[in-house]
Image 1 (spheres, each protein chain N blue to C red):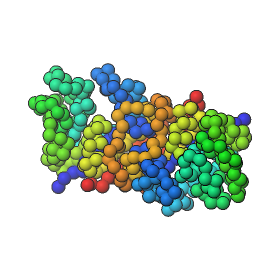
Image 2 (image 1 turned 90 degrees about the horizontal axis):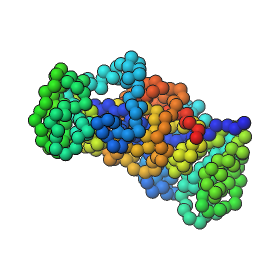
Image 3 (image 1 turned 180 degrees about the horizontal axis):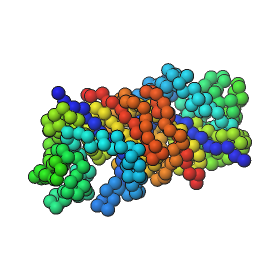
Image 4 (image 1 turned 180 degrees about the vertical axis):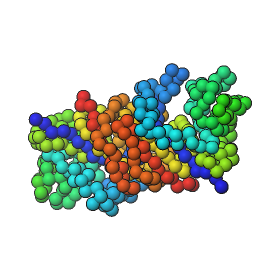
Length: 201
Length: 201
């Protein structure tokens, strides 16, 4: 038995999950200034269940650009944005074109670097997660690849009342398809939570 | 005293208000098949207040591509998609590059063709509406022009659980700005209604 594949993304109303030019100083790119995630930091109690569910998975997949600002060959001193004890507490499979030895962090998080594509990463994540969910953690390109491949079962969008106008666009390249809403929208003035079930293809 | 400027748009989750290749047979373009507007036709009672508010304005602005499928010189036999008695019951200002005499329809709708741009159309619509709202009726390009010019006060999005993947994109070119949510999201499994107040610029 296999758990479902989930994906939580904070998104602007115009469909961006980050601005352009991600960097060490601005992990979410230029022009964002934390406005996609204010709800998590300013109202954690109001969104406690949502926040908890984001990291409630048996394994994670993320793109290299979510793991760090570097490109090309690895800086082996970089161990992610999250300090010594990342919030995942589970195996994390990082998509990259550049091989690297696995990293074991405090609290049960391991980063394993996968160079043979998103389908291979998903297989390994499923095996690691057992009957628990696999979470696709981001960024936009990785989520869009998974959507196009029909690998995501449940998409949870956290829509901030912001227009960015440019940046990393989510939901691009997935084609033409119907989604099934799960529950009703919830949220506050800082965010609207929308959940959809996707057809597995 | 001047009424507010509103804009209601049915939109896919990935931000499109029509597919590509609008035509007489497919006014909303290819690949849409009515899926952005199912809520209006299958559940009119559930959305009665929303539907009523869409045409509750003292004047309207729309782009020529919303008025009809023709391009270039006018086919003077074309009087809109809506038959003899359009649902507007008020002056409608149609943006076009091609001059045309005004059309008076049954039930109080008049179509006036404006060739000197969106700001001029808005001035005329405001004058016609008096203290009632002006509604920007669409399509995407017209709404985006109005957003970029800071002419819209209240944006009401009706988000269908559909990905289109291509077509006429809303919310493009408006730049980077914060919106103010009005009320809480409402809706059913066929649509989520989201309302935002915009800064007038």
